[in-house]
Length: 576
Image (spheres, helix red, strand yellow):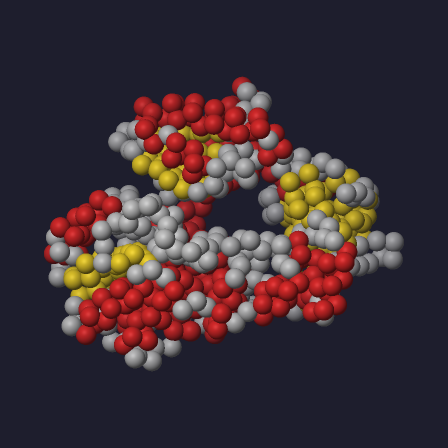
């Protein structure tokens, strides 16, 4: 059945015997068992999945070079050498930097924070930064969330006598950059057991190792809020130890011990128990905002400060920058959509989009690429044209490997890399047209083998009655939290009479569904008027419709109720 927005709804049905076995053996409701089975969790794994412990964390020494890295840091601490933390400017890098800054502070060591300028220095370790750190008396640099392919910069560091420890989690090449040590769960010679960790977790494990080696008593558990924010925002799978780290980290976050996170939570009005949603959609974008359009160190400085006045100022600054980022993003997105509409009108069968514009800010092109990809369900590259170096960011659909396409076309790129679903590149202006040609050809070949990948789909975990979509179900589903990458929030279809539909704000729609017993459930459809969904709902009052979406708690004037965050709809009864 195709929906109002053109998507195919797929109801995922686990085997009945598996459903009953998990439900009865673990005392779970059938709906929670269904959700777990739909995410590939087996009955024998479910207890560990739901009740994992920090005791399940790997020993830091499980990882290659961890001992070497630890020994070098211990030497630096004992000899009072100057240490610098070199971090990436995204949320993961900001959190990882803050973890090490705060850890060193807790053991009486003042480490220098260095976050490269996105526009002037680009991504990752660079020769300019290392020369600057060396000239200011630093003996040791520890990279976080970056560095595993920074071969030229590491050669420079070695040449000027600057020791570097690389901690990272990105995909590596066969060769390792010249360094004292490289700790990365994605090294070619690692067993891959923990390849899903983010950079902040690697930094946290390093802190554990150094804490043990020095015999210090730093309370590292209080840094888990930073690990949780990074894990959610870096979109690594919420499986294995990641689930435990996020769960425990959210509990630490609720205590508001981190002055910077507290200031940001206060300014954004987070008053309830923090969830993964707050990390990914409230705190994360603000921590990220400076790295996109301003001083890239603001996020790390906020997360590592112990001064409430400074924290308040930085939180306000990041909040304002996020609003500015949204304005810049909106302008770029509007231009990109107009460009996309023209390309699609010219070629309705187009299989991918490359959209390039003068002056498009490099800090927002990734977000715009995500939005255009969602809008057209096509692989997309957004490129900000510059006379010297144009920068692009790509987002893909399942089945089209952007990283592989970028690697295949390095002969016309200045630089580039990525993975299946996202990639980045730097390119000379005159090569953009050739890249677009090759990109389209690659995607067309892939689609020819599997045309289904261009059909947008929504996976459903169940079909509910209006009376079934209530707080009791929401409470049951909370047992499978935290939700996020690899453990998506459950989606359900709900059928009822559309008793109410009204535009709220400029483009959202609020609805009410009722059943024959007069039970009702409310729903909210964000940005409904930007698609066919809004007009459909407004024009089908008192008709039977089926909506699909996620169940949320809604609190208004102290009264709590269930609400559907509607994603799509079909007319009449849904049939799988």
